[in-house]
Amino acid sequence: MLNIENITLKRGNKEILNNITLTLYSTDKVGLVGVNGAGKTTLLKLIAGLEEPDYGDIQIKGSVSYIAQETHNQMDIDNFSNLTIGEYIIVQKGIDSEEWEIKKLLNHLKMSDKDCDSKLSELSGGQKIKIEIIRILLEKSDLLILDEPTNFLDIPSAEWLMRYLITYPKAVLVVSHDLRLMNKGITKIWYLNERDHKVEVYRGNYEQFMKVKELRDEFLFKQLLSEERKAKKMFQLAQTLSGRKSIKEKRRAARRFEQAKELKENVKELEMRTRKGKKMQVSIPVPQQSNKLVLEVKNISKEYVKNIPVLRDISFEVERYERVAIIGKNGVGKTTLLKILAERLEPTTGSYKWGFNTNVGYYSQENEDLDYSKTVWENIYKLDWGSIDKRKFLGRFLLTGDMIDQKVRTLSGGEKTRLALAKLFAGGHNVLLLDEPTTYLDPDSQSVLLNALQEYKGTILLVSHEPNFVKNLGIDKVILMPEEYFGYYKEEYIDRVGIT
Image (cartoon, rainbow, N blue to C red; front, top):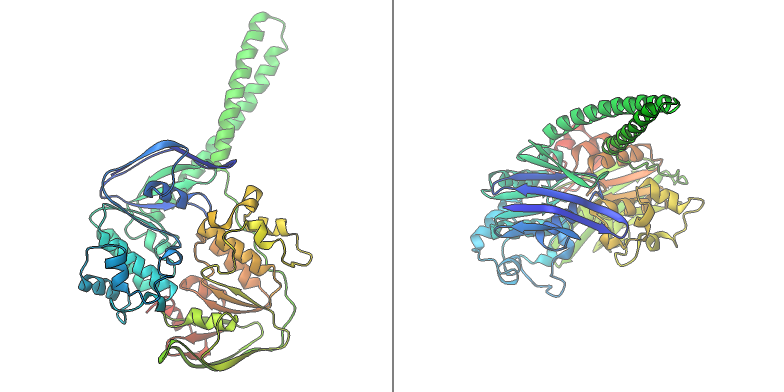
């Protein structure tokens, strides 16, 4: 199905992929994994024919469908405000499909309230992703390439998608940081190692990969120690022999020096393979204290289309240091509520009031505060971060070296997320509005972010589809949607995180 032979790719002085050779067969279900910024999205784009390698060859037999990481931002609907779901899929994308097939997939993806006549402009980001998923599933290609397809999806939709991919009769190549899904139907793991920029192939799902990789890393470490000892002994022996007078001993010494040199090269290679990747080192500066009453919301409603409310008469109060989770399925108004509180939208009716001395920071799930046409440095250098050293602070988010001068549009989804979080956390905010902050972050980075928020000395309003993240953050109160119930947190509410 797919043959990759010796492909290499660099961007400037940065090596992305190094002499990679891979094979994917016609029924393989492959999970591509690696840390943020390792080059996973780049590899998928090369396979999909959207980019070209510097060297090497990629051969594909059959048709390919590709869904991008930020596909909902790339949908061509801006000039067609009245474009319907059916028109988008059948007419604009030219897919030979019946309306009943589209409706069936809408139901599977928990969009039973929508049909082919529903307008794309009225959909949330998560719902737009579902439409793109429906599009590529209806194409029925020989190879499906999906880059983070479950981002922004509620859990039932994500689980249905993975079940569909498991039974899909052709090849699938998927990137996802959702480990529940990567353990269910993946039969092979491609691990893109950010240290040597090569891909290691493991049979089995993600959990099996991690066990084998841990054993392999342990073996490599033991091998490294053994090679270091050998090199040291060989070098000492060569020095001893070189100090003797006979020509024979000096020749032997020269050979031993060469052997010691070879062993040291082996040690360097093993060090490269056993070196741990860098992790984010996030700490949120202590903000100025706000008033005890942080936020008062009274009877807020919102309509994008007349007489079709997204929010209905919602009221609540938030006090200093509280953690509030907003829980509900895609399209019920969670993002809309945060955007209103962040002053990005006006409510249709009702009002809200921030308490005295509040400094509100907003993280948008679509990274709206980043200028994609500018570099990382151009996005932040004019900001007032007080005494914070900008370059060092970015370094804590693994934005270092040449990356500072990269255009934001060239960054991976995880790198964009880290830049947006760096901008947010350096702002001295004592209130954080967080809309899906773990999106595109690898598991290690999610854990680091969680620890930072646990230590944060301020107030948090959070939207997240990650049950463990919500559970471990220490939630005090919840807003349940679409019922718009506000009350104290109960353990049972975790079962509703990401559930329709």
